[in-house]
Length: 355
Ligand SMILES: [Zn+2]
Image (tube, rainbow, N blue to C red; front, side, top):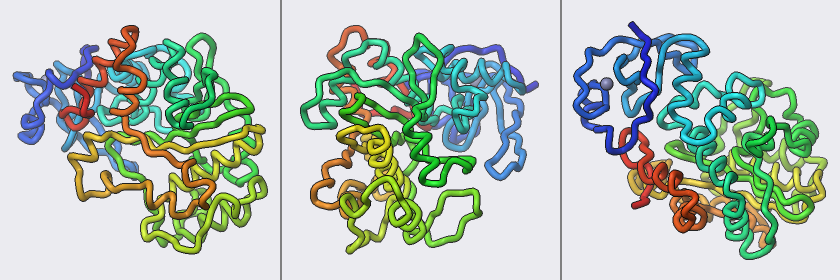
């Protein structure tokens, strides 16, 4: 039996990490006999993993996935359990749509996308808080409420999502429009004509580093030289040498953040937007836990080392905890979001340093 009728979300106080290590369902005191549920690995290989039918969880080595059974409807039920805010809007607009890669991962406890949607869609519902975030990133001005885009789509909770055309244009001009996975800023905040902010959100995963290897034709390049060639030398939108300097290349070249910077600058140029910023959003708590590992490596010096003096401050590091302080903590309308951020787990443990 690999189906479950459970519709509950599990948070910090419901879970016990040590149970996971013993191969048990991570829900405290659960004694339900475990079954097996299918799990497709990235290379298409099918595995069977332990499954708790009572709690509807597929049990992985270091965390869990909400799982209600095979098939599309069960996947939606499972994803909704991980979407605490505006779940139906997310399902209607992003699940099994071509506009969102990997929407099936929305049911993972470790899903960056579920976390991103929960936090930003709920921030949007109260209006002003995104403006505070914007001002923090831009060091003061401007004072407009920004538009929110998630995975390249305008999100406003009242109307269906629609694509951001300047991003589509930039992809086409940078020859990414035929790739199965084009560059996709997780979050964009846009004040037309004034500011564009592209946010690369991380939860448990690390910022990818350039590697000296060849990739298939339909993938984005991975090596430093090919990245710089494709996104700078052959970039017809921006004057790359105003922004970048490659005289002293860092050993660790953050390829995804680099592409985000190229895209932010290129989109701003296409859309006639005055200023752009790129933000790397990470969990301080995860960085503390993973000290010494790739997930916790400082990025600011490395990334800024390839930016010219005038552009160094266009790359900003921010933590989910800082975002909580700026936007959530003091707003009584966001107490559900505050609760979520305090109780959200990663690998069955606290996800953020928020108390
Ligand atoms: Zn259980």
